[in-house]
Length: 360
Image 1 (tube, rainbow, N blue to C red):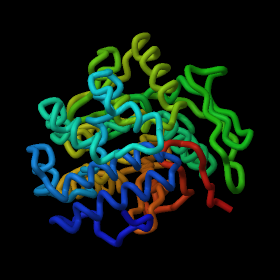
Image 2: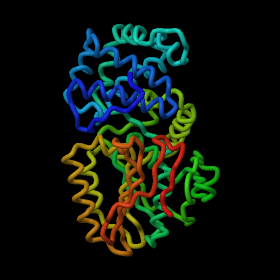
Image 3: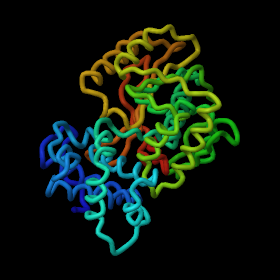
């Protein structure tokens, strides 16, 4: 499979788009230090050549947009779950990154023997709840505070999954020697910082609430396994973070409601906002999974609320999302009162390893 990204749009469908999505996922994994996941995805792609199982046929005949639906990662998550649970020992050499084995043959055999367990993994998008992304949210809030917005934040998150980023107030951040949060914190983040340091401010949280169409309960071992299955096995630190998040959720569960993004945002924006707080909508690597009609409703609701925003009750929108044209993640913010124009604050690693701060 090609090491280069193949040009495609997020909404492309059909056989060519499916193959391109798998090829691009392999290239993306290799570019992000995930060679084992790249091997799994590449082996899954060979099923397209002869789709003899229902699992392979569903992938080969995928009716939606494979890139937007993260089809390769849905399938890879199912295989990883089999490996983590010890159900499919044949996969162990691949996950050990062993040489001299036929990945495609191994994966095809596992699919044949465990198809019933794998098929449900195609039914929903990946749950890639990653605490490291919260460093971006904190950096953006520091920037907002530097713009004169009240540094007390009432946070709303869409696509919260298990709510790991809703526990943002329990973590410690070292952002180019700018420290935020309790010490030592339930987790501590020191991303590789590139560029000028962010501004230094004291920030606080008035509220942290999120939504998901299928919330994950971290205190349920089976649901926690689903999240672990979507962690790339090469990224050991992310497993440690997951265990820390599980421990925190057992102490006090994050506030998540079952709702789609549009209903949640409309309902929350209708709620009274306390003076001296900045209401923030935030999300990371989720926008592509929000249906287009809901994206429009969220945007309309935010812009309407922005027109009502005041200096005492401002509104902000922080997004860390993938730019599929240049294949990296961008930290973009809008805020009101004002024009609400987008400001790109930086670029970031998808799992929080580094932040490139673009603010002069």
